Image (tube, rainbow, N blue to C red; front, side):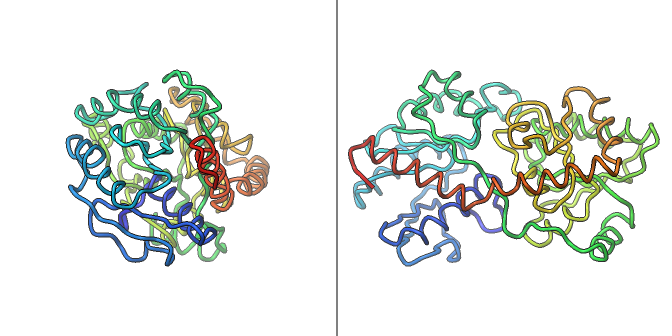
Length: 369
């Protein structure tokens, strides 16, 4: 949990463990950080913060932190359970653990990951999945994928869905107009939210946007997020884009700023090649804007019939969906279905699911909760 840098795993950790610490004052929670922590992340008095080095932001440092630094913390505090919200566990430790593996995209698309990180993931994550007493993941799709790829049984893996933040909600028309005036010169726009890396299909969306505009579409395209594994292919497509002036990069947005920009959009365009869950889909549902998403991996599961589904590998499908989403009756239907769907994916429900996984793991370890 890094201040102002929370991505999917960071929000999962923040939202769920804030709730669990508040709901379970009988539990001593030890939050282990690899650098000085933000005090606001220590949610309750039953949380003990511990800082150990080295800052684990490189494969060699990952190994040192989990295999040498972490066991020393375990020796001192003697925990009943270790929960790793990004899937890494200590292979040297005998403390029962839950590895939360959000997805294993790197197993299927290793080309999207820098070489050193890729080598680490491919070498160790299978071992992490087998070593952990239980595994948690964020969708039924990811559960099936982890079990099939790593050869572990379904009963070992718990599903703990992601949720949508409480700060996502629809805004009045006058405020929507003000946001569009400031952001897109008053134009309607499609929006993408996420880390800008190849698996998010940034290049495909940019190409599909060209097709959409060439077919008479006029909406602009707003891209929200920080560059992550940004490559030369994406850069070249963007720099040579015929409608480059109508593509707006906002950088990272959070909280109220993100809500305003999302709630003012014409539709969410979220057609990744691979997602373990796809939190922006739920955020858009909560903001009551229609969603275009992909037919692959977990996205149809999360959308649940409340989104326009298209093949992310076919530009004409994406562009066609961008045109179809103009239909008023279709928009109304998708928004209503999205509102119902959003009720399933709340952080309160996610915390309940995580606590159940904790109970399952303590039971398997012979330490009842």
